[in-house]
Image 1: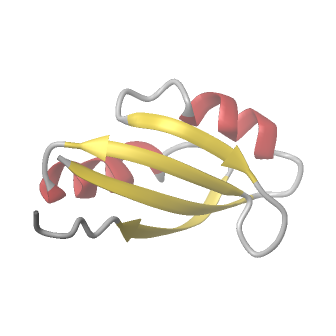
Image 2: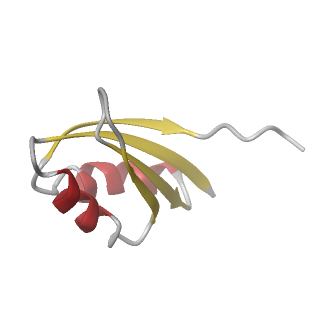
Length: 79
């Protein structure tokens, strides 16, 4: 399992609309609206890095209103 957090910049006045669309997507677990450089923090759980790549490029960035994204992949310590 891969957990990632995508930080999204959204076009002006579209943050609520975009957040409502994003939360409907299958691998999305949480969407947080923020102030500052990024407008949304999106928590994503997928099976593989390839799944993450496909999701971010083909689904998330395709949503009208998303201007840019930065994705951070959670590092899990070995047990």
